[in-house]
Amino acid sequence: MSVRHIASSRLPTEWGEFNIHVFEDPDSGKEHVALTHGAPRGDEPILCRVHSECLTGDALYSLRCDCGAQLQEAMRRISAAGRGVILYLRQEGRDIGLGNKIRAYALQDQGADTVQANVALGFGVDERDYGICAPLLEMLGIKRIVLMTNNPEKVQALEALGIEVVERQALNVGENRHNQHYLSTKRNKLGHLF
Image (tube, rainbow, N blue to C red; front, side, top):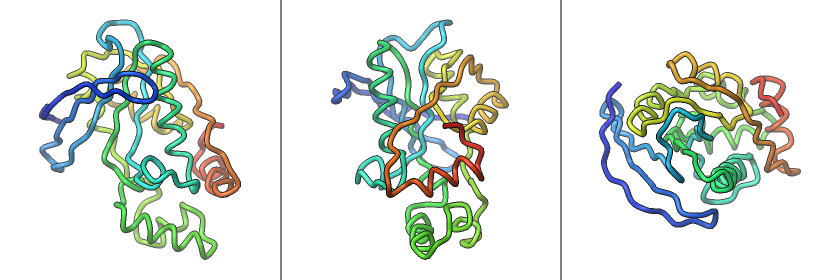
């Protein structure tokens, strides 16, 4: 898979200064982002978060999920460590899109869990594809990662792409009364580790 670098710039944030790099996947036309902090290149493992876009959680601070809290915690940890990378993938709603994600929310309001809602809408449980991660990390000169995730399938998917995941770090943040059922479904039906 080939990717095209569009632009890079400095990005000061609440958690320190990052560099933002935008890449285009020519197959899908989607623009993905890598946020780097410190010097990411080298043989030493680097903290990494592979984060799928979640407008409601990341930008609108929804309490229905733990996405925004995980993104913020990843930025905090990377800043504290002095180096790291976040791959921000444009895969809203496990890659079913924003409109369908809100349709899934409506089904959840009626009692379905997140898995049942996606299936009822005609989608797989998780439509995400991590294939873009390998060329992005390669372009950034990153060879080995410490992956911040609760999702063991994400670890397996990245390793299947030839990415060396030397360790998994849990991101147990963001639980609240509005997302307890969602997190329980992730644990019991999707095998997430909390």
